[in-house]
Amino acid sequence: MGARASKPERHRHLREMLESDPFITDRELAKKLGVSVQTIRLDRLELGIPEARERTRRVAEEATKKVRSVMTGEVIGDLVRVSLGQEGVSILEPTADMAFRRTGIVRGHHIFAQANSLAVALVDAEVALTGAATVRFLRPVRAGDRLVATARVTERTGRRYHVNVVSQVAGEDVFRGEFVVFALDSSPGEVRVEGGSLHEGRP
Amino acid sequence: MGARASKPERHRHLREMLESDPFITDRELAKKLGVSVQTIRLDRLELGIPEARERTRRVAEEATKKVRSVMTGEVIGDLVRVSLGQEGVSILEPTADMAFRRTGIVRGHHIFAQANSLAVALVDAEVALTGAATVRFLRPVRAGDRLVATARVTERTGRRYHVNVVSQVAGEDVFRGEFVVFALDSSPGEVRVEGGSLHEGRP
DNA sequence: CACGTATTAGCATCTGCTGCTAATCCAGTA
DNA sequence: TACTGGATTAGCAGCAGATGCTAATACGTG
Image (cartoon, rainbow over all chains, first blue to last red; front, side):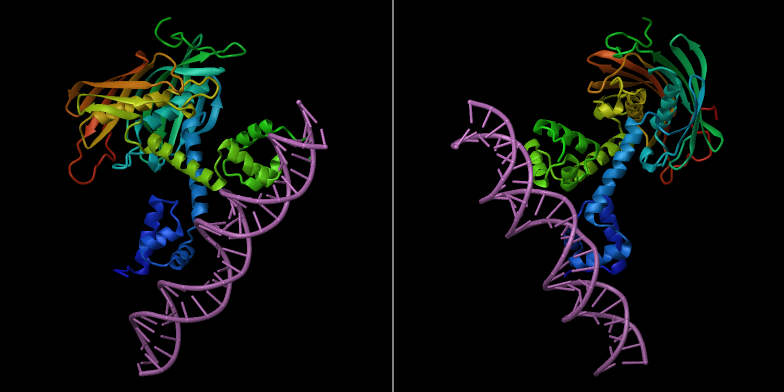
């Protein structure tokens, strides 16, 4: 039936197809590759590829884990050490998704996110919000690098904290930032932040 | 058997369980809720809840979509209008995952991410990297707000662009930032950024 | 008691798989 | 040329998790 590719080539093809669509079923694979379903099964067996349902399950779990850690997580990166109100260290190993595909260079806002969330985590309050930040990206960071962010509270005036953050890769500074974080020490009960220009903007 | 809850209460319970674990099967649900599998099926039918396999598939798709848009996406938010090298507008509607669970206030780095990626997108070059930024968070942004970011290139000196970004919710400024972005106009072929302190740090 | 809602039960059927056995094709080689 | 072995295809039983349908109970209330 038509131009049939060699076995290793089909295997390569198979992997690619599964990469772009992990939910595809054996039957569909067979049709697209012009072989029988049985062949697909043998191929999967050989390549150690799980069945479609298992694949979907894994995708679901991995992706949700990622979403949790990147969006919902209290801190972007792993909190290594924290002294509330004083200093702390967090480590982030950026994945390829966080980088420009073209260059492998990690997008600045991921580096910012690590620093920002660390700065916020340092503040000893019910709720803390970033009010302002001045940051510098000193060197490009690449996917796979080990980003170590160190934060220190340099000043505190009432509810206003100044936090200095330095991020390093292999001991070399790649990012520096000054964050102004506001503690909202929420009276017991509901936290009200509603209308007021609560942070910055000279009340 | 034992203490059997009322039907509406069981439904509430059901929803909760599925929220915390969407992969759970009818059989398991039946066991945990102390009813028969058939009852679970009727319940799902009544509540319009799809089967476990369908549920996993949806979770997988949604989560990957989210990961794509938040981590891999060229621009965080939807690019509404862009004049390369001049100005542009992007819109982001932050979801609950982007906010502090406690207060519903969106984490600063998501607002930063929108602004940063917009600033980078404005630069008319093969590759562009953020070199520095000074930002202010003027008001808390809540999940569900409609964040409209407007960026304008205010200055250009060789490869260095200054981009001003203002983000609004309902016409009111909530964020302002100054970004310094470097264009790396990559000679055809590989983009080399390796060792050099290519952006910032006075070469 | 009768009626209606809720619950449970049973069975045929579907999809996407696994595990197993057997047949076929085809190329290289003794 | 006939034989051998890898690759491919075929067929069947069985499983898990479902749907769709029919029927039997339970239970509470007017």
